[in-house]
Image (cartoon, rainbow, N blue to C red; front, side, top):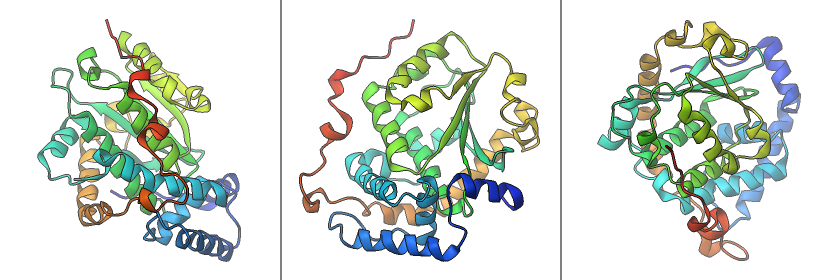
Length: 308
């Protein structure tokens, strides 16, 4: 799966928005500064490659302090939530099952303002609830791949969630503690600029799910959630042509796009395995180690999801 990268005027506009230095030498200087900082952090790995560091810089608008915070959390999450970052192999039965019943492909094209669109949809409302941890793991695997493959930089991410097959049964296993862990990973450990979330093919369950997730989202992200009663309304935000064929677009079918990403994830199997050892060592952290309670709070403080 090839991701179309911005070029020309669009690329220039994105660089301005991300505050990217005009001189490439300045970017290399910033990478050097981050590497020097990493070398002085006894608890953090030193294996982050230049391509991913550039993505971190862009996602943090070239704020070196923000990059340092993100990198620390990136490696800390791998230690704090090992269930998301181990056994990342698409050939495993549990992972294969998830990718068969949930499509989650980033689309190849870009919106007019330079954003990447990610689709998320189930394939059948009658299927059993897939393994929730494996689903979240697959999402983060794609995130890790994009750190390397978004080689130019995009303005942000737009998520389109198709709720047409969502049922109360499917969401019964989404515990508040698990959702919070996942959203902290996404919001604090990855250089993601979430611009919009669009929910289509809504049903009565959607409001309940959105209200369940909102407390774990930053306020500015909560304000970017759009609920659409018809697909035409989505086209005001995401050009019809760049969507999968199921939604009237020209990007190909969701299954084909998802299968292409499954193959891409397979190409990274060896890298994912190597990364299992790449995590924060809390025993070496200067000052107090970061505990699960500090990072996520006590599980018992969250209300349970109830759906009529």
